[in-house]
Length: 325
Image 1: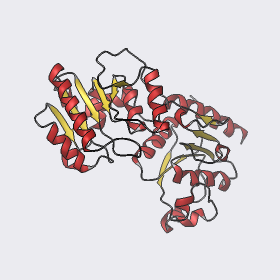
Image 2 (image 1 turned 90 degrees about the horizontal axis):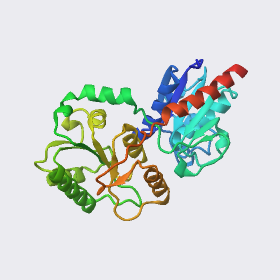
Image 3 (image 1 turned 45 degrees about the vertical axis):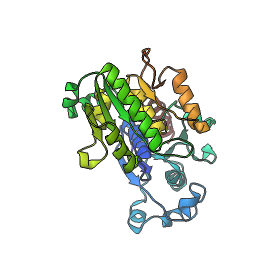
Image 4 (image 1 turned 90 degrees about the vertical axis):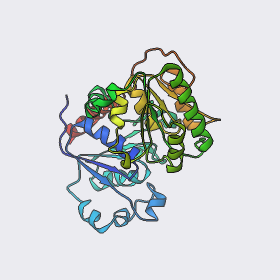
């Protein structure tokens, strides 16, 4: 394996999905890493990553003091706000910092050394890598750690069905009517085949809808987790023990991680989806990785695990740059 020199800065905003992608990629590079969670003030927050003039002054005093030379060998950002600072690092370091931006930065990708944008973004350029889904840490070792952390899930009756709930987003039905219909279908399936349900909220799931979900699933065998009041987040354990996963259609990250597990993945869509999200769903369906909630038979497919392959390409590119330097 290629040995990379120097350290890596991981730059994100507060969004958990952005942090998860960037940190998963950085871990694969096996470089000493520092995570920056940056929230620049306006107008830079409005105009990121276009407005670079004065961008350092948009940070808090403490972060300005630390965001300084010596610059890292590699910088990985995820999300629009981070793109401002990965773009800036390329200039500040005189081109010696290899800059990686995850997700479409909405400006010319040539401003970074490598841009990683999922295929449904339809961003094409010589330095753009296009995975099918989002980057994530899910692999066999990660799933085993999840099983080890929650061995009690292994005693629940099979099939163990993990249910991953996202939240409302523009153009996607996610309201009381949706939750009621989803819960009723989950219960009907459990009535027919037995097993248990492991239902998890995300940060975006409205509390009122989780209350409704608890009411609809009252008395079912399994688990409902809606936050820290229910204990630690059992997400890795649920993915590790799941025989099947049901994921709401709104989250590319959750669908990508579910498809990385290796068990069947289903979703429940009401109405149409936004264009980009529909392209992603269609790509998963076309590769046999995503099914409707009424599907009962599933073909075996390879888990969707792209992070290691993306990291291997980056290793080669970064190593080549370091040899030049």
